[in-house]
Image: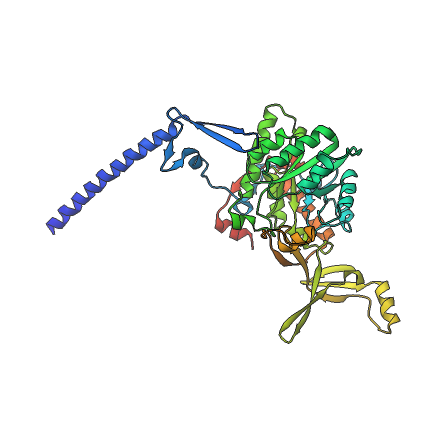
Length: 459
């Protein structure tokens, strides 16, 4: 018994000595970390970001085999699920109507994603009437997109199309041109070369949207190139699988927040805010709450795809259930043109037949009731533009490995219902944060939450 105690005591002292040795080593590493280290960030002529780590020794401080700057940047980043918006201590806003959820043009801070399962030339004006800014997708013919862009409305173009039509082609006489250069990788150096070339030709007569970027520092390149709008985030969209297959990305809440901080740096140095690229949070929006979080983080606008695709009036092909036959689900194209007064009640769509459809049925000696026809469940065929279906829609064939997916989304609201809800929820959030304008909302405090907190509020 006695020897057991003696051995245990010796082991304890031995462990204490080893811990002291480890502590001494840790202190040495801490001293390394406390050394003054600066980073010089610049770009080569091809637009590649170069980082030079400068220390008081040999420019090669490492921990293990990793450069020290990699560890400095090795901090947790966040997505929308990880955060909440903190209310103000006190709000002087007594009624939601005191809050203005619109931009200077009377539009909600929302863009449609340039996806043909969301928007096309047939429902373009419907989005505008509901205060959402539409972008004509690349699936529309080139001439229609050029006309749209030169009419002061947003249209999407490939990088090659932009080069030929707006950077090196014949000069367009319009004084209000709005162009989205719609490419997945907004880190391509040539993109910014073409933006600068176009700006030299058109100056302020053209507004250019670029993207997508997933590195906060790329915002500085956008500033230097006189970009007007920048889409932020790669791989977070409902129809995108870039991030999951390539590992490329940046958690969107942190991305928006850090880009906003860089934007504030420029403002602090005297650059006018209107001369800086507007921040568009693009991808990963699942609900009203995510829109509000993006705006509170510092986004000027939010771009939405799948949520808009689930609208009854979206450009997506609509399918309706028609029961099961021989063990197989029967699904048919939803003939929306036959109905009016469509409404979603009790997890089901109802509508009234149009007079034109009733007349057609009577001509064929079929008697039908006009009102309250039960339609059932309706689904939207949604796909990312980098999916096989998206590539075929744009280019007539699959040209490279798919980085998007196709899925059937339940259609559960009309555009009017969704916009009414979004406007009310946004105004409510603004009243809690004492924000009378969208710019005020950007000053809101953001808090990081636990997984259990997220579970408790998402019932």
